[in-house]
Structure formats: C-alpha cells, structure tokens
Length: 303
Image (cartoon, rainbow, N blue to C red; front, side):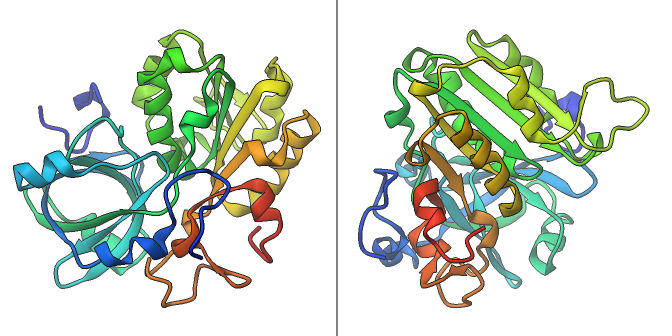
C-alpha cells in the first residue's frame, strides 16, 4: 500500500529516575556510534507542517534485534545534513520499523520533508527513559497531549490498545490551537471503538467546519468521571501546558509521582553537548526525556 501524502491511503545523571524505567542516556552513550542503515518506506502528510515517516532498518537481523519502549527517542541521521533527536511514534511491538512525526522547522527537517520513499537515512538508539507502562497495570490511565505532543504520546496509545486487559479505564485527551493542527485524525475512530478507551478532543480557535468542543485542554476534565485514587497520567506537549494540566490533575487527587511528562521538545543534539536542553544542572537528553512530575517540579526552569 502506498502510504505517501493522503489520509485516505492509510488504514494505519547515573541513576534510575522515578519512572522505574531504563537507566538514562548516560549509560547508553556507548551505543551512540552504532548506526542502523535504514530507508524511508512510507510518508504520510498529516498537516501542512507535519509528516509521518515510516523508516525500516535494512538488515534483517538488526531489524529483529531493534526494540524500544514508549516515550524513548532516537537520533535520525540524514547523510550530509546532520542528525536530530525524535520521539518514536509507532507501536513498540513492531520490530525494526519506526514511525517518526516530523515538523518542518529547521534545516534538517526541511530537507527531510523533500525526501521521497526509498531514500537512505540512519538511526541510532533507542535512548532515554520511558513511560513506565507496567506500573500502570490495573489502574486507570489518562493520556493527555497538546499539539505536537500527540506524536510522543502515540506509542503509549498503541501500548494500551495492544495490552488492553492490563488497564482499567483509559482516557485520551487531545487539544490543539485549531482543527488544521490536529494529528493522526484518521485513527480517532479506531481509538474510540476500542473497548474502555474514551477519546476527547478540543480546539481553541474553531473554523466553520469544526463541530466539536471549543476551549482549553483543561476544560476536558469537566467531562470525565474517574477514580483518581487509582489513576496514572502521561502528559505530552509544550512545557507551558504542563503546569496547568498537572495542577488540575493534582486538584483531582492524583499524586505527582503518578504523573509523567516528556520534555523531548527541549532536546537538540541528543548528546548533552549543545546545552539547549539543560534545566538547572540536568540535561533532558541525558536524564530524560521522561520524568515524573515531582522530579520536574524540582528541576529549575523545567516548565
């Protein structure tokens, strides 16, 4: 199936942080020199600024060995142009094929948006901490995203879909500035049809075609009924939204250690060298990108 361009072509520091997940990036740096030769096998245009790239590792043995967990990231190398860190947007159950949602906003990403299927790229990783999905077992789960944050959250959505019996009620809450910025709209019906999953979407600035909810993403909390004594939450999106969403979760009675956020948007070089992702003395790319909210609240200038 040709996966390019149209929706209708698609049916588809040195310690552990409190996520309980993998050791952080500092222990992974020995793997940084390993590049998996890969090719672009599919491109889906999501919005005028975002495309979803399907990338497959060429070597079959390497493809079988490659695995990741929701919330982790990899380095995508474009020969002759450089490399960038990107959260993995695909299902962790798929071996050797990853999906990356890429916004056109810099030199490397602008070039990527001109590339076609069959083009050669390299991937390194996976790196970083992940969402502790196993810790959520037998609990309710809130999956909350704003704007491009749905790209980082999508892997966790796949996980709860594919392991539905592990969890109680699941709520997906997604908000954007306007309807044209919404990602993965072709999957919404599938998510809603999965037993026990409820999807809520909202925009701040509707157009004439929009008939859904209007307002801020925090307004969606007025529509859900959930036992917060047994609930975990993941929040992905612009850092400015973390404070408002997590404060709302705290007001509902969800402990900070049960909230997890991804600070992947701060990352640039992915190696702790450019200092663009540092929050106080912590580097997001080395100690994250996933943190529990209690840790984030104690990181200077994280949000």
